[in-house]
Length: 208
Ligand SMILES: Cc1cc2nc3c(=O)[nH]c(=O)nc-3n(C[C@H](O)[C@H](O)[C@H](O)COP(=O)(O)O)c2cc1C
Image (cartoon, rainbow, N blue to C red; front, side, top):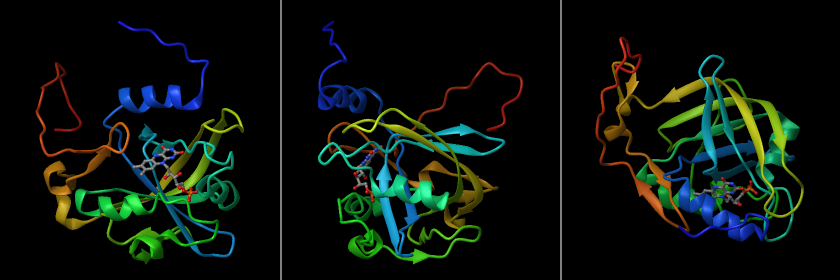
């Protein structure tokens, strides 16, 4: 085994994070800009935290290129709400475009050809082409610094879930119908079209 210290440059640590923690699910976070226009960006440092209350977390880092806070956390800290839109393979190209570093206030819906639709409980809009949307109210922020590459955890409580009927069976989401993609190392994306089942030694299973 080769060993590495973690006190060097951002990029040195980052390559081990993205090369080790994968496949990563992708939260495509839509928020409202100061002037009421839309902002969208993907985040693969993303996970579920709690089922009841229903809490999710994602981690926008300080831009390594400029040292600036990204537009998504700026909007969330001001508006206290956001939508998490999910990515299936068909949408991947357009979602990748939403990661382009546009000047603040420029609408990534327009830039990437995605369609904004109103949410039910919050002002931030949803991506019509996504098969799943979580409407979220901001809950907590844990900050790890204000220098380039520093991360933060933003959590949100999901207050409304939208799921396309075409991926539902008996009220559950079917992976093969959903066809999600995840993020790998570098610019890799990962398909989820091959799954296998392992039974657990439990008396009851909620997922059955
Ligand atoms: C698939 C994918 C996943 C990404 N995940 C993250 C992430 O977890 N954290 C992060 O800070 N940036 C991530 N990025 C980069 C941001 O999307 C990018 O910096 C974007 O411009 C931020 O937009 P904003 O300024 O509108 O918030 C990711 C990019 C892609 C394409």
